[in-house]
Amino acid sequence: MFTGLIEHLGTVSAIHQDDGGCALTISQSAPILVDCHIGDSIAVNGACLTVVEFDVELHGGYFKIWLANETLSRTDLGDRKVGDQVNLERAMGAHVRFGGHFVQAHVDTTATIFKRALDGDSLRLWFQLPESTAERPSLLPYIIPKGYVTIDGASLTVTSVDDAERMFGVMLIQHTQQKITLAKKADGERVNIEVDMVGKYVEKSVLAALEGGGGETMRTFVQKIVEETLVDKGILPSGSVFNDNIQ
Image (cartoon, rainbow, N blue to C red):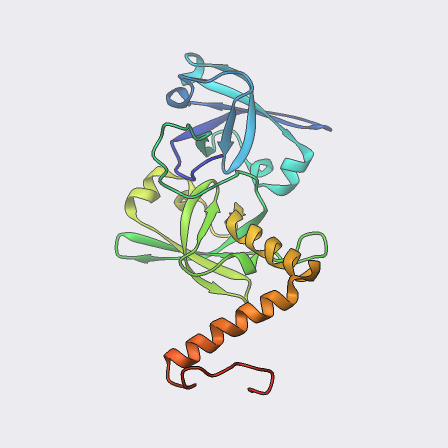
């Protein structure tokens, strides 16, 4: 589990690719390797990956990870080149303060940087999600204004959503621009997206209740909430019974 608070920017120093996937070497990473062990998880641009080799001193501290073809198809890591910087975060420790949101570092899809605009010292960015398919349905239902979204591993607040254009926006304060790679990426580049997992669990729970015979209970519950709201607003008198005849 991660928090979406980026700890360090590492640099891709080597790429070795074959038919089975790709090995990345991330250098200049000593600050996050002081307590590292083989097999540890590190989120690289928001993708949870396993450390297969590391050294705290060589190349400013480096570690190596393996990317399976599934990871390459789901993330932007296959687009990275030697010299690119990547966002790094170690798995969350039980003793640390929780400052972001619950991030699994399981990338759902990629989005494209659509446009940007300065807003004082801040930077507004808009992203366009891919068209939905049967294999990969739209993630827009899970992205809401003022909700959380993880972009390249960074926990950010959604500022706007345009369902018709499959777009959403965020704003980066000056401090955040300096601490993550997002502001350095160009329009048209891909970014890794992970939506808030809480929304996924809520949706699954509601669907399970409806499909499992709980539909009538859910209907009664919603009716009760609507009735109480109408009474509070003076639209219905107190003690009214909300029934099927009320339109």
